[in-house]
Length: 412
Ligand SMILES: Cc1ncc(COP(=O)(O)O)c(C=O)c1O
Image 1 (cartoon, rainbow, N blue to C red):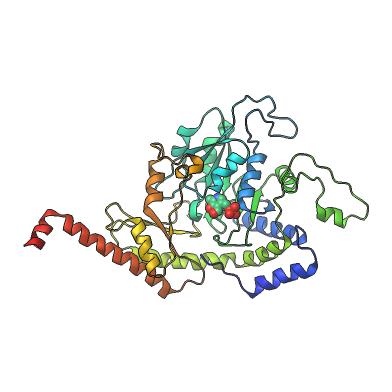
Image 2 (spheres, helix red, strand yellow):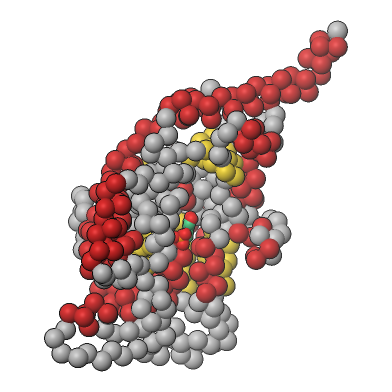
């Protein structure tokens, strides 16, 4: 991934610096309003609130606090609701097949991440994979739109909400993706976005929570700022001295005005970013279509991906291993990456295989993420494809050698 940044972003960042207001200030407020409006716009417009934070990891942490998820014996709510809960920690169902931040956010609130398997085609959680993992202690599900493929949010809400379980959408990868004709995040109670440079829209580091709930938005704004009930910008604007109060223990998860200035320019480019990625992704799909058994990321029936990551899944029996393919990419000067990681295989989460996560383990072991960025050229793409094609050829030769008839013929 290479971010698509240019002179406009540089000028916007410089203007923020020259203004003298470099921490969270008016540009953050403007970026929040513009981003939330872009998610809420469309066929069924919805008024949404945006809360800018320092990363999507921070956004997920705060979203879980807002959803009332907590550790053993904690009161997750400032008004004491949840006090007297039993001594067991809350559980949150998450995919193991995700960047580790998804599971880590659950640990930050003292709750227990419970890993559910994913669907092989979308690489996302489904009601079928989540239902067996629900218990009396499940308080939330984090539904990830993996690699920008929209997950079926309505189906997950239908499973969870009648049971009093919150659905937090981890839309880290999904700015610009579409679910049932609306921007991803538009239908969520709490959606968390990332603006890390591996995502389409970047602010360097940064994140955003989007919610339709004004009460939750007000609390989230306090929580990202140490629980302060009056923001620095409000105090600055007041003509009388204002004494702030700290209503609960919060965090410093602020975005800076320099980042927001860049974000505003990037938001204006989002449609072009998505269109170019979809064009390049279709070209990859077309060029790779002839390789037997190779599967690629694609749109689900209910929406459109922004192709934040272009993964390919190697078929069983592909002649070279995934790691050998990655070595061949490196030798050809191609910067490919392994597929989506699986948190449960990492030492931080036990590091052991699990009989409960067979699809996750297959996907993480056998997929590769190909280069895809706005300024990728067709000839660069052709180099990537030629490495895979050559590997597939190796695979055919190996397969033929393995077949008894062929090896006799060769021996003859
Ligand atoms: C699914 C998912 N969730 C959360 C994150 C964390 O985002 P950030 O780096 O903005 O904290 C990422 C980042 O890659 C991600 O892919």
